[in-house]
Image (tube, rainbow, N blue to C red; front, side):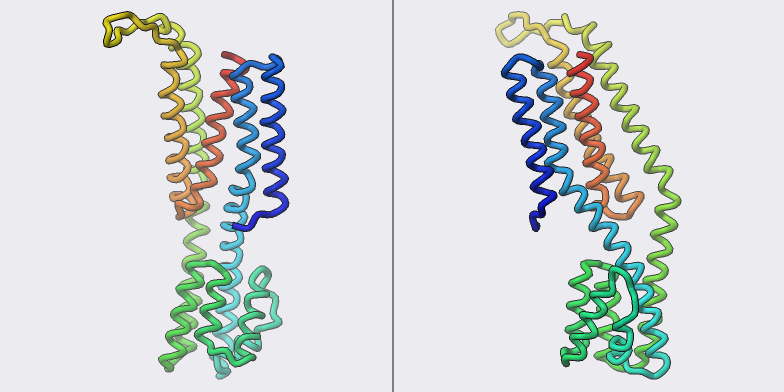
Length: 277
């Protein structure tokens, strides 16, 4: 993964926050729980560029697939008019396809240089990094090799891409409320655990348990709350993945939701411990 300037900037900021917090802790200005809280914020800044990159890449793929639909429609019109597919692609070279324009121009230039259409289409699919486009391009390439009614195949591909795009938009619109509900339910879950930790566990903090030597060992509220933190982080991770899969159809898209829920959990828990505990 390429390291960019903003990655270094966010990482440096996170490290600086952690170092300053540790120095202030050593000077006795903040307690250990406040140090943990600040370190979590610094970790958030360090990991933020990675998650932003995932989000940007996801949006980029959606835009590319939308523009690819326009490209295939124009390609169908050219091929139906009797123009060979290679020539049709070259004719579309200078049309504006937004984020896909540079890929279309590269594809047309490769064809002009004499590179076989199937090879040029394969490179085109790899450059876009889209599974939808990769499948569509594979069908076009095979149809071109086999000969026959290439315009019918391209039209079918265009129709298929259009259906995928329409279904995705409908799913996002229909599932949006469920995704929001997922966040609300998770935050309520965090609040319940915090109430459990700060209101109920202190009441049983004086309980004791016998160890292997039959001596009595007192259990602190912190020991009671430790399993709750593990439960909270596991819940955050898998809730985010489920929200991503349901709302956007991809577990990869769920990583950003897991990241958000994960840090909401840590920030609320350690923030509550730092300033309320």
